[in-house]
Image: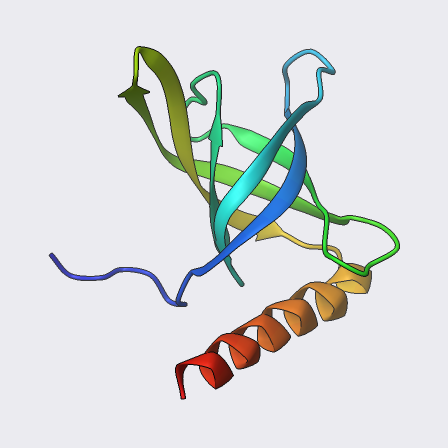
Length: 120
């Protein structure tokens, strides 16, 4: 199978709050399992429909406020473990405000650099 991602995913647990655009104003909390400059994967208790637009707030360590991101659900699948259902969703970032991009991308660059240092 050919890899279609533009960027490597970094395995890092980041807290994420999200809401589903066009649904009730409910806020949900989860933890990103991995992240890249253009997407993320996280787990949740309910399934997200493919194509749904999410408003995310990604909490970056040492950043005073979360990074707001608009994302599209690219895939969603169910997983059962020990009788409990969980769902995983792959997201594509479609909008990051200009004033937040430097903080977000600097964090990812530093994380990538730190991970490369540990390999050597």
